[in-house]
Length: 365
Image (cartoon, rainbow, N blue to C red):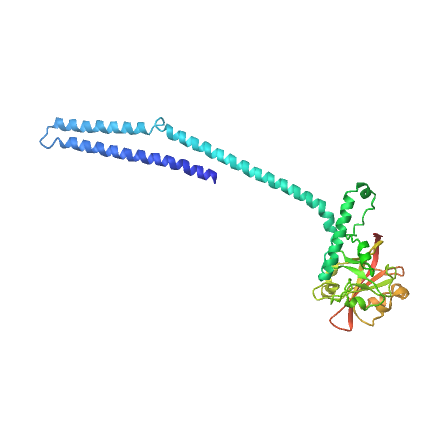
């Protein structure tokens, strides 16, 4: 834009000069022809031939003088001031362009510096971002997620300021993508025993455990009445998930919270391809489970009897149970396996939807 502006200004000044000179030349020529006509008129028909020739010669001389004068006026020497003006205008345009380029470069440098600082800030906080699991619960679940985040921030700050401690910490398992600090939460809520976590974050909740299977079907983890209830472990199962089959319950909410997203396995068989694993996190261990079957079963189905010591019968021969599964899985379950059954309600009052995972990895937490 600066270059175009300079070009217009330069040619505008030249056009003005040329217009003035053209008008001047026309005026001079008109005057000369008028003089020539006047001179010629002095020699009428009665004038001698010699006088007529003299008048014509005089007009020709005046015309030549006019042409020479016009050429002199339009010569480079006469146009010197205009050229100097054009040169000065070009220099001014170049100076403006240079100044604009310097300003643009300065802005680019500033943005680049800001991007570097922002990237540095992002690098410092990336560990914390990875620690925060997706919260899809109602308002009561949002409160517990806030507490977890605050605990994670405190732990992260302590780790960063203690380099020696960081170097001695055991490396994390690649699959253990959560970092739930349970200590403070379990102090505040004594019936909390762990955390259930799907690795894509669509399920991430505390697990409660009490003396019956009714309390947390109606109360949230804080003991308040809530339609969402809470995620809880069957009262007959061991709190450390050491049983051969541990049953965990949660409501099937329409908005997908709690265990509502489990129905996606039944709706779309391809959903399993990207959602094969979930984790159970306790104060001392992190367990990773591979889903090997999911199905609709009656509330009185034999699977709900496979708890405590009776769970050993299930893992010794899981085929009678697996026959109802929607997926044809060849994932092995043996007498030494540890299974977690996730159970939720369905639109039919007499049916439950269950997702079963077998323990494939574990690490200290």
